[in-house]
Image (cartoon, rainbow, N blue to C red):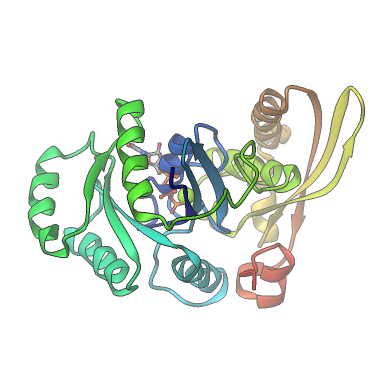
Length: 296
Ligand SMILES: Nc1nc2c(ncn2[C@@H]2O[C@H](COP(=O)(O)OP(=O)(O)OP(=O)(O)O)[C@@H](O)[C@H]2O)c(=O)[nH]1
Ligand SMILES: [Mg+2]
């Protein structure tokens, strides 16, 4: 029987539901999700293994038109994902502000010259829009599916994987071991979970200039001891991140710890510390130091 394997790049606007979709397909939460735009920064790889198929999903940042500082990294990162993927999925979210933005994503994906397909994400929202969009997209002559991560998940998953199996290249064998579902290290994953809890709990623009770095990870027999920094770009943000009597950072720590413990199935001690790195999102060297580097 023929075997198919390769990399699938998820391309869409910020907040299009790419990470939610990736988690749904993999069946594990390997990529963080938030209602705020620009949650995903560095690409995260998740692996779906099925009989005759290995799809390596590359969850990328959303497509943005800005190109300085941290935004420059986000732009370089999705472009690199587009280049490295075997198959591209244009994720067109039904709750996007404008239809033109969605058509632009489709055009951009088509222009790559790669095998691709369209997924209309968040299909539980605005059903009327789906019909109009479907008509406008017909000329591309690529598969179009609708998907919601909130309804009929198994059905959607099966249909999408069937399309991947058609589009991905033949391969002699799986590219990665079949019992892996992500290539992210525990340390990086933990930093992402903490960043997700910051995104949910801290308001206004602060999360966009916030990074998390795990300083020390001690794996003991009965407990993992994790020491992490929440890095912000302005001194004046510190009191906001800490909250009254340190209540906010405590809540962030508790939420992150609970999720990490659940996933690792182990007790965790989590120590969070706020560190200020003035204007790091505008400083290319600081951006790199915080791990935002497009891999060669
Ligand atoms: N109604 C509805 N909401 C969804 C669906 N999928 C995702 N969402 C929500 O949409 C928001 C954004 O989801 P993400 O998966 O973080 O989107 P993303 O495209 O990865 O966003 P960035 O990483 O910021 O580019 C979250 O609040 C999700 O809960 C869906 O199928 N239906
Ligand atoms: Mg994302």
